[in-house]
Image (tube, rainbow, N blue to C red):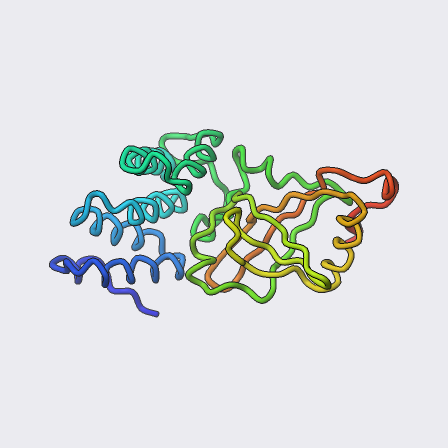
Length: 227
């Protein structure tokens, strides 16, 4: 979808329309445009915490972490109990900054930060970690709100494992073969953490880490180490 440039919205004051365009920009991973549109919204409605949270996320994905910190701080001044702002501000506080921008390598539009402290989230350990693309995804508008490094949760079903945000919003499901294997391990006492590794409007890749291995599986790795 072609998203109108901000200059064509210079005299646009319809907040509903601007909000829709801001969400479309995020879904398309057009973070520069998302930042501009959300700034426009905030200029009209300075107490719009949802627009401020979207603005901060766009700033993160553009690599402007110091600006994002200030924006999240503004959200918390308006809404001290805002879960999104609190969680992301805490995450940003653990990330090193260089000249106002995160030291990243690769395409920030996909918010796949691989350097800095986020590398600790994704440290590969043979047999204990796995990167996997989820299936049966939630709508793009839901996936577009995710941040790299965001902790997720797993919901165990009879024959599959679903992945959700920490507030319980469904995001997608693990492939059947991996679900069956992990169901056995989890029911046997293993424990795992799951994080967002990479997300676009149509793709969500997660990083799974074994954090505790049951004595029952003492010599049995959670994931195959071969390529």
